Length: 266
Image 1: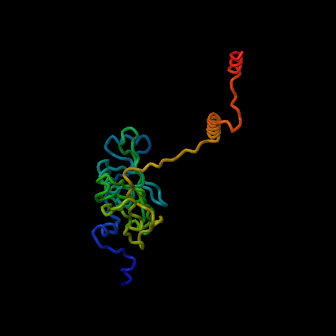
Image 2: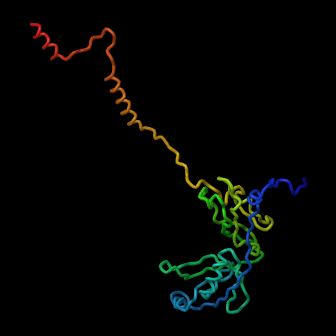
Image 3: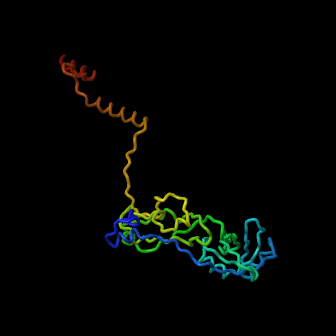
């Protein structure tokens, strides 16, 4: 056996292959977004929203922030695909694109429409930290048949890498899980550790199968000291009522009955 084969699981059937199949990070291509520099600030900028614009700000380390406006329809389309973990080229007024990540999206508390966006410019030579979403793929027979429940224990995984190596998501295939308590761990992720680092326990479960119905444990409640005392007194009282007189010991009769017997004798 050569060095490459050492430590590999013994795969004898399709289920084994599915279980140990590596789960790859998905890296999306850089997306494009057009913007206009914004001069209206504060409450005066609210009228821009009525014209289908979203207020946004580009933050860059060591530089002043740049207020911009984004087209609402275009941004929604890009945000749906990019999320907060895909690089976006933002071109302001047709200028040189700046690579950014979406860091915050604010919604109207009443109407739920997007009202403000924060974008953070990144340098391609500097490593960044980001929370990468987990996407469950595949169909699991135990879950489908109602025999198991799938627990997603890590909906996001924090990684550190260069912006160009940043995964958009981790696809986790659950079709190979065939037993209760079986799951997929961080160590099962097929990442290039020379480019992407994860500062979490490798044995931590991302997803795991559990029983569809939780088994209830019957717990016997211990009596409190006060309850124990009352129960003890009741047991003693019951015992006294059923105690037979000792041998040679006369049974006491009621005084009234003795007087009636003496009258009859006379």
